[in-house]
Image (cartoon, rainbow, N blue to C red):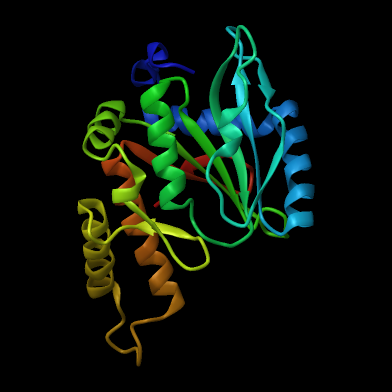
Amino acid sequence: MSETDDPEDTEGPGKGIKQVMGDYASGLMSDDVIKGGLAQIKTMSENIKGESAFTIFQDADENNTIGTPTPMGKYSSSGHLSDTVPQGKTIVGDVHIHMDDGLPSAMDAYELARENAKNDNFEERIVITNGAGPGSIKYAIAVTDRDALLNFMAANPSAAGVIIKDANGATSFNDNSQIGRDYQDDVSNYKATHSNPNSVSTDSKELDDAAALYATQRAYAKMGITMYQADGNGNFKPTK
């Protein structure tokens, strides 16, 4: 799926670019080739207790093949993106598993932006959280505003100024960057307007999770990226 497909022109109600990219993620995850790769990385993640991944290739007819499923450790960079691209195909995205329950990480989004800036066919990442366990949650992050993405990458050409890792290797936005400051402001503003005045504490996990989702969506939008979550039927829809 490339820019020339111009999903903004798709006819029908609710069929703007965000809907189309959600449909695209749903289609990828129902493809037998992708499902076969997913089964392999689930087994890998169970064995190593960490992330595993594979790249997705397409030919001119949008037939999918995958790179070598790769175990990658607890937290990882996109080493699997070094796969040699088969002749006549292009990388369009990837699938990887998180062993925790978190949202697609700041580094997940930054790497999507970085790869798309180099190759506009690379539009989507599927991130499965708690992916090797029961009740795994499937997310997709997809490029829906390439102009915003290119502007973001021009201003932030290195992940070092935008992303930080904690002692365990988990990534988040650097509070000293503009997007990091905006993220923290959005978390604070959400909590201030959504806390229950009758509650003893405004630091409940439910409120924390909702604030993180709100701030993450806004941060990714600044990067030209939209986040989706699969419903019970496996259909990806923009998170709310």
